[in-house]
Amino acid sequence: MTAAAIITRSTRASRIAGVLALAAVILLAAAPWWGSRADLRLIGEFATYVALASLWNLLAGYAGLVSVGQQAYVGLGGYVLFTCVLFLGLNPLLAIPLAGLAAGLLAIPVAKLVFRLQGAYFAIGTWVVAEVLRLSFAQVQALGGGSGISLPVDAVRAIASSRDLREWFIYWISLGLGTGAVLVAYLLLRSRIGLALTAIRDSEVASMSLGVRITSVKFAVYVLVAAATAMVGSLIFLQKLRITPDAAFSVNDWTAFVIFIVVIGGIGTIEGPVIGTIVYFLLREFLADLGSTYLLILGALAIVIMLAAPKGIWGSIAQRFGISLFPTGYRVHWRE
Amino acid sequence: MNWVNAIVQGILVGGLYALFAAGLSLIFGVMRLVNIAHGDLIILAAYVALVVVQLTGLHPLASLIAVVPLMAAFGYALQRGILNRTLGKDILPPLLVTFGLSVILQNGLLQVFTADSRKLNAGAMETMSFNAVAGINIGLMPLLMFLTAVAVIAGLQFVFYRTAMGRAFRAVSDDKETARLMGLDNDKVYAAAMALCLSVVAIAGIFLAIRSNFDPALGPGRLIFGFEAVIIGGLGNLWGTLAGGVILGVAQGIGAQIDPGWQLLAGHLAFLLVLAFRPKGLFPRIEG
Image (tube, rainbow over all chains, first blue to last red; front, top):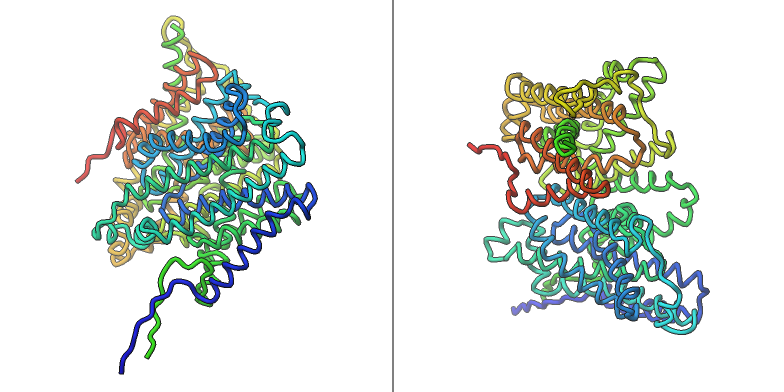
């Protein structure tokens, strides 16, 4: 009797999901031809939150770096874009990668500092960094100080001359960043770094004894996520055309919502942030009129999920049915 | 003279920051929990005091006799009902649950009390002061606040090292399995620690409410001050936490003296400097 082991990575479900995801992205990319201006804005915002949630999930769900200070990079991205456009006269689209570069560079010394704090203290340390940036930008009079500054329409004309075309470009970049963040997370987790991250997530001590360089892996993920978060942030404020320190470094908008999205969708899964964002937008459609009650409900929902089903919606489904739409591990089958 | 004055006032405010920090330090020491909602609980205590004062007409400081037990009971229930279920090897659940709690407290207070800022009026004692040396006036309230902080820290130190409850705290902190074998009910010990923590939070909340205006959004800022005081002083050292609070207060005082916009920034920079050059804090606990 000969038995052969077949090792596969993709499954039938993941192949179908891959095709469907591709079809969905193509359909969404064509939205300027079938959707209204309001549709574009909604889908663009959706993609932005998918990006922020996927990036935070990479930090907290995989690298064990629970940050509550990612608004530092969202705000920094916005301010770098405004600085580049207003004072250097750069094309706003060119300023987006520059914002990522600036945030990546800043994240290096920041990581050296906050990595000295363990676990939960790390979380509050990242928050302090965001506060320092908020207070510092509030001191810069050239950028409007505490009351903020606007981007004149002339400056954004460099993107495209017509308003429609400008909005399309911004929409496509949002969509690109949203899908890009999910895709980068997926590819990263399938790579060597991903293997190291999974090992760290399961046991830091064991992975260290096997030669995983924990600190450098975490450091690399932190800097990468900071840079990508800043690119998303610069895009957010390019759409708003106005920035203030309080809006740019808002812990509620850029961290609290994002954490709730990931927890509800399923932390430590690639599908979770996408599902969480869908739930978040649905809830918002129905409950946004309630104002602060809406936040109350969201907070309570996150607590209930954390206590009753800590793996979130997607984590619970995947565990129950053994499916994975974005498989990062391998499966072994025996064929006789 | 302005500079000396800024430093003296900074030291006194440092007492308040030490009060913010003491509860945080206690909880971390006993159960390795960092409560993100700590600052919002301080603000909750301030509002509870406001209601008590409005209902009974008590002096704000006298309202402590009602607010401390109320907050302690709330802490006990919160720990037993929710937080105990999050404790474990994984740091994510307690962090995310207390983060959710923070958002709930902020928005709940916003609903009930609106965003208007409030203040507790302590009457004539608010403006009383005496002249320490020529040019330096020390207010009665700031001094009282500082002395209260010293007394609270001394009291916590006494509870921790001289009482049966403190022995239980130290036991579950050192080794929770063995503590259970020795007959301790860990869940109850944790709940007692949280009750003690929120008693300190109640005192901090009342002093905060007398000292300045407060509104539902102030919580996160107080959490950060408390956290910075803990790290500057060194983890696990209560007297170090007092020193950390004083250093933070002085840094803010000096910053404000340079430029009012620099007040908070100077405090954060002092914290980052300590983190960069003395990551274990200025007064780390001696191990062993």
